[in-house]
Picture 1: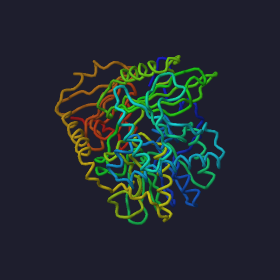
Picture 2 (picture 1 turned 60 degrees about the vertical axis):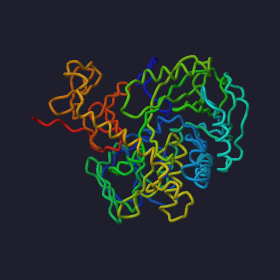
Picture 3 (picture 1 turned 90 degrees about the vertical axis):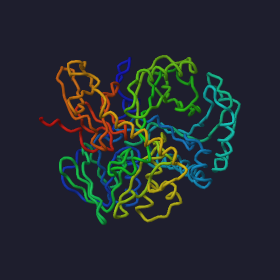
Picture 4 (picture 1 turned 120 degrees about the vertical axis):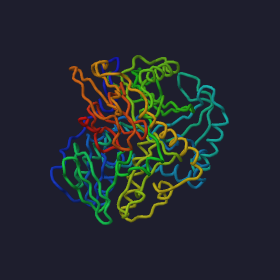
Length: 511
């Protein structure tokens, strides 16, 4: 995504020096094969390697090159879906486990930073939940009471956020949250994995998976096979599951701007409001004596809108109204979050497999850093046969009757996307498509994803997503084909960018 200042990537990707790794060159065996080199995959590999397991990590992109590189890196035990909703869905015990596990994740990150001497700008900061415009104070009261019942007894109500440029009004203060540079942290963990005897292979796209009762196998698109005692899929959205898990969660795009501000002009804290979708704010160190104010929000379902510029403008307007010290918008990016219908992530044994040796981590719900760390802790416990009180809450096979309404709403939305099969194309021919852009063309009974590159050459693929066959839509800001059903994304030439799809958009058959 290109900004007005010319930057094309997130703050983290622009300022990290990540190690590089070779693709898998031959068939291999391991104790554990981990698919995905983001926060969940790398953390799990690190913890398993520390436990003496021989691990292999596979990813088709660089370490941290997916959604971890697009996070805003709020490290928090303040649940973004609210503790009072969580308590209604999972009971007081479930809410207590959620609070404890996210708190333990912050503690574990801090311990790892200290033990590995990682220079990643980690610091403990306070977090503040404040009312959105028109918000009701009773929401804060309900959340305060529920947070206390969940064990977060140090959460307190204050009259306003201290030392901030706007009057926030009544606010909940969550002490001892955290923030850091996520890719500097991930880089250090990746190096520790190899030091502990593990191997990491990037440029290795997993295209096939066989869930065998004893030793499952994954196969890359160039025919290399890894056989392991256990396989962990930590790919944002699971690529090993065809249907079941994808009915329990929905993919959303969330938008972020990074604004240059004078050093120290905004206190180093985490901030969230109660809007839906909510705004989330923090600061990071910038260059030349400045800070970067990071502001996110304006979410929409993946593939169902193409108005990123409008959303970035809305974020900037919201930001400038509250933070008049903003000098310029230096970064703009978006990321993908998976929203589970019952508010909790899915971490543990994959439901339905013949053996008990396939694990998934998904459903981050906008809290990917703590969620990915919980995944590392819980999956390591499961693989090493240690009991965990967290297992039942995060169990991917769970079914919640209380989530039935949200389950129906999300899946009816998915069903509605199949009407795209009978709608007209966006343009009548490829001649109407500007250079560097894409559009859907109808050709008889077929929908075509047509992209005209900067040289004027048109590239055509089937517009049918290779996961569950919805029609993809063009994302003009990121230049991707996005599936409006389950969040699969493809580059302009049809190659997979995000799962759950594992196969590229199909080439067109001759009539």
